[in-house]
Amino acid sequence: MVDVQSNGRMVVGVVKIPDELSASTVDDFRRELATLISPASKVQNYVIDMSDVDMIDSSGIGALLSLASKIRDLGGDIKISCLQTGPKRVFEIIRAHRHFEIFDNLEIAINSY
Image (tube, rainbow, N blue to C red; front, side, top):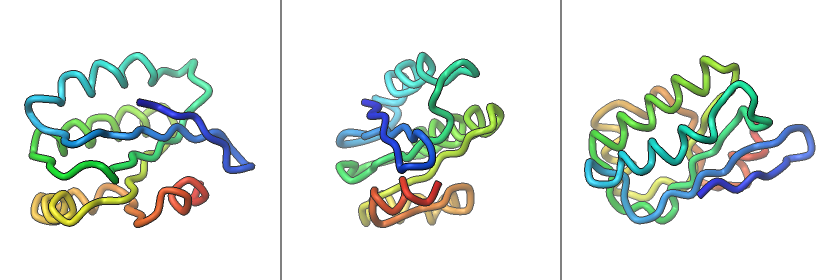
């Protein structure tokens, strides 16, 4: 789920989310990432790759906002890449797009750090 990449300046964790991030999948998502995010981790900055996500609900948005808060509390940041049309609408309706930098391209998101 997390691929560690370097942009030449720093290490960036790329989190690829499959299919959907919803009430039925959010607990697994939180559990998996909770083990990776810690003050001792060499990765502080993350890009969430949503290129395969065709559905997200308010539970999924809540999980991303919670994750962003934890990462930012540790001095890192989180960015979103490759939002598809449906999830992008949900981000806009819930106004979650105000809490994340969103990029159309994964490589550009990684290099923005």
